[in-house]
Image (cartoon, rainbow, N blue to C red; front, side, top):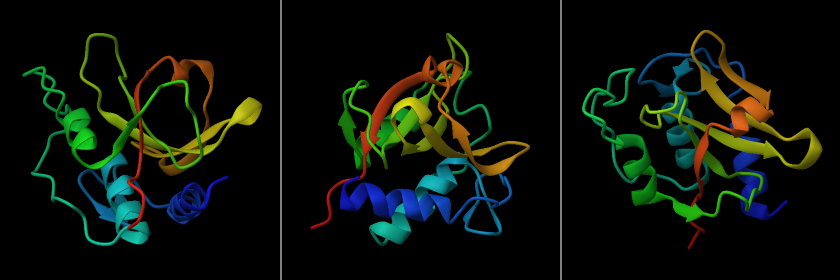
Length: 147
């Protein structure tokens, strides 16, 4: 595991057990999936590059805007879907035909692949990256290199 990937996974695992709180980004107190990624950014990169505006749980679905995908593309480096690595940020489309609105961090790869995410009703958990989850991945990103 690369140095940066290891730091990101370690930071993400430090959030496990944080309760789910829509629009929050505070380790131990509450976060949603975007808040998890924002918190990890602060831990490994420093100040956030932008503060998200208030957002609803439907993530601009009625307007069909890929707001989360666009924000990820502004600040993270896109990767090919097949290039899986620890510390990757993965973006999910939860239902076919809907906008992409869920994020996670790859923790383990290979036969026992896992990802860490803030999931409504569960908080921050590490989950098997099973076939049903993999089918929902629409984009893969990396945090920018330090420097």
